[in-house]
Length: 493
Image (cartoon, rainbow, N blue to C red; front, side):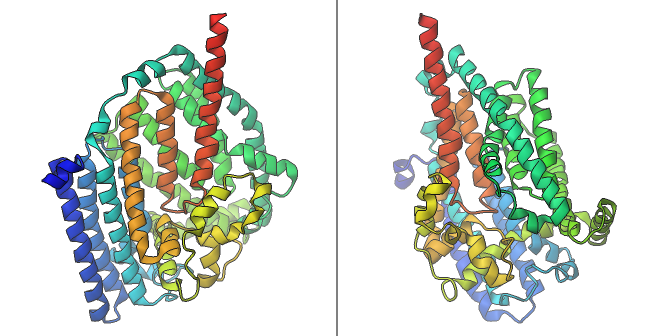
């Protein structure tokens, strides 16, 4: 226990770390055994993989409960999302719906990647999640839970609270019209040309580029306002504005901003309105499945738009597809497609696509710069999706998506497992920072915003993370501090 005491780890977390290490070694052995004994029955092998995954994730959720940070937090959200997005299609196979997967252009049964690679990637994902778990357990230092009294006094200052509200309202007032105009334009293009063609038109004119840039400030201002007015009637107005945004955004055929915002709003609700537990958790799961179902409908609808003569014909095609497959199967196929990204990157690197040796990390710094200054590097070379999609589906206009696990393997190969440890450690420190400063509305916003980015990193890469942090956390912090200092000086006069 001397090691545990040295790192200030309590007994339960120390035992979780030890079990995680044992499971990692067991998974390495199982992967070798699977590859040597594989008899060509991929459906059976994937069913076994997902049953192992279920057991691993039960353990991971137990470790999350050991942290005593409530049912809903950034880590529990990451675990849930990662299981659905990495093993959704595995579950479809386990449930006996493999025939449906075989009809899809892209699936784990499409035959584009060798069977042993599918199996190996399944084990690799589980190993990465266990290493992340170790990082989280190390990062959650129990002594960090002590509340900072100086920060408490500052955050309860009326001038500071008003500064957060004022800045959020001002930003929202500036960006709301450009945001709505931008997405209205996207909706028109989507229904006129189809989703694939409309993607290239979203930033055509100078006006649309300005609107595109400003639209990214919309959700951060909504988050700050929801946090600030959580116990006020004004939150109804804020929610209505947000819902208009959601409807317009989904009509464009895109979904990821809504995905991020739902995670953020759940975290805000859990902290500021009512802690989610027991029956509330069951309701949340039902709502979550419904939202994922909506996302699947949006996907099917955007594919039908280009081939339909009318909205009614598009709706009919979408309904027929969902009715034939089943709603839950459709959702799991949609979410589980992220696993293919990891599988393709593991199989194609470095034989076809060379390692980038951390180039995307350097690129992340460049991404902070305004777009006209980013010409020093090829931005497209930073995108795992754009690099690997042509190698898998020959699709150029729409990438197959990405994942932080795929991105890290493209950078470092199997050494990316070490990188996972740092990601987990960062998640743990984020959770402890939130507990220590949760009384501060801006710290809550920072936790919520970063959490939404980390959860969505399961479906995308982290190359833009630093840019988002600088523009939508540090810049807001600077504006709020500026307003706070101004109002304090004015009050002294």
